[in-house]
Length: 379
Image 1 (cartoon, helix red, strand yellow):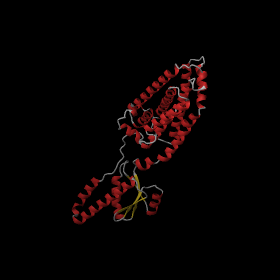
Image 2 (cartoon, helix red, strand yellow):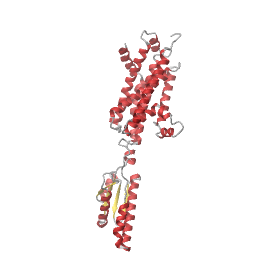
Image 3 (tube, one colour):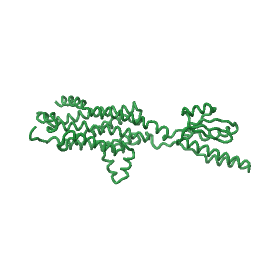
Image 4 (spheres, one colour):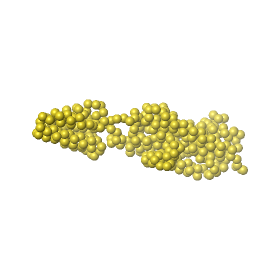
């Protein structure tokens, strides 16, 4: 009987339009919008990479000095600048095609041309200013006291320092990827709509199907558990689709622990479904009222986790309500994905997983207690 109920409960859940819209279509659309909006911001303006720069040498004497400096600051793989020597026409073409961030013209002194203002353009400007200042100091020293040129040159060389990449973590530090973590949390939380139907369809005063189940000889606990298992199975499928879409289609870096990402997403889906189950078990409100309550609760929890504004979670953490981030299911889900991707050890990740497991157990227990013993004067 359990297998029979489980099979048809899956088919029934898949026919619920809210499941198809909110758990499959909506996350795909929203994830695509996120990728279009944030896809290249981190790589272009925030993530540190060597600033590729075209160099046009118009003075051979000064060009020789510049090459020596360029070699001195570009010996390591994590150097701040990457220089490409070419002619003016090719340099302008590369700048227009955005193959380089700027063009340095080597004449009596350096001059710079950039296409737009950005952090990397500012780095180039500071480099050119520093170079010209040092060149002037050396020239003035040669005129005043040539014997000190070697001492001054050595001192200036020791002052040369460039910004270098220092990884704080081996994971993905793209701050915009937290929106995709929140997207997965939203898919999980909207699974509460499917969990809601488990509760309402087992209450005789809310639906004809619930009335038939209440007079059925099948034990109610068995019916509810088969409904929950079917809902969890559908939710697991939806979470797997969302993760696969984010990783393979949107190509968001979710780290190198992909199997754990899938397992975490599925567990997060169980949390969302169990939340809907407990909301649907509360009181004798009609199904539409509980549906609205479920949707509002999910959106509010996702908002507090940073889905609409990434700074909200941090603001809550800095307030007197910092404890809320530890009990907010959506925030815990996001933290689990973040911890899995950023930290090498599993301490924070395990804490999040344990919290989600406890949440599922508590929600299901409360839902069963409120639903199982309910009796009706008439149906």
